[in-house]
Length: 524
Image (tube, rainbow, N blue to C red; front, side, top):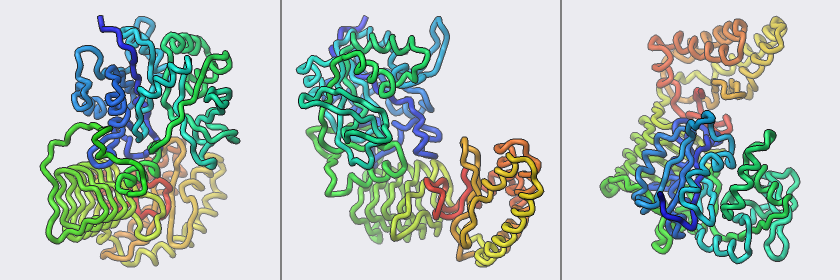
């Protein structure tokens, strides 16, 4: 039997993080690399240890393999303990059956036995996708001082962003009298940080009530907190001041990374008084070549830099060859940027390869971040025809006429909608083809290529025009039709089939956040 522990922390780390796109395709969001040598989960774990909390349950669900490997026995955070320490808590099968975590509250409910094992007075509930430093011990003292049932850490956010958060209103004593989850018309700019301190006896009571409600979403913000408030329980707001960033989107992740090299941002990862611990990459010191130019950047262990790096965060074991140019970008561990490549305003995921002379992202005024998927190989533009622009201009007319003809010929409403979605809008020499609903695969042509040789583009365009109409016409379902289109033109254009053609065509952007102005690519 475990020894009694005054405080148990429960870290919610099972979310998919769908807004991070390909960065969370194969890993849980808390395991996404950050700041060169860290992963997002390092921050709440380090906060716990620095606050004197040594019993931590990490609740995992979505793609947990890499996160589990990274946590290991908890040694980097001093959580490899005989009593307490870090525990990975995944959904499991009990006598009553097995089920996934249905929401944040249900995830805690399913692990009541784990909490009861330590018989705590207080339970701290944390989110695993925030970048911040916070002393939870001070928040617990605040909770005790006010004899609270629940204390919520709050941060004042800009009014224009308030609708993205759980918003609460307080009196002069910081007691909460109103709470609204993502209100359309916020009455306050005090936002919940997703950090809660509960008196365990009270939390258990409301978790059981929530689980018994057939209409609940099993969510703290939507259900448990409002229920406690409506019942007249003592809820207080703990004011927080300092750096805090929700890194749930591509924008926010890119910004949070570059914040560590921004002298105007109060985020010091070298502060020895409040260390952020991480698993050591076990790499040698970085090497900066004689021809390299590195300015205003963070370079991690194991890097070999021969090119130019400006205002970027370069993670461990990254190689940047001579002539390569990396600006305003985040390069994650193990990536390789070859000679002459240009990487601007981008996030390059783990172990991706940017081939020689390839261009990723846009220079000059930022138009949104380009994201390169893990292990993706982005190849040179040199294989594309110099006449691509002229071909596209011809296709605009061709597409416009044939779309009208085909639209009249197809009586099925679903197929008509598919055609409209596939062709989307045609602006100038840019052609965008996409079906974005429900994760359906899509194809996008964006930026005109100026250099190259050969006639592959003309052949490609002719075949594609035929295939897209045939497959759309024959398809009974959107997804089936779109996959069929992809397979067909890949096979026609490249004898090696889908995989070889993917390597050839996916040369610039991978998957972009906005789907606009990012280069030529295939998204799936």
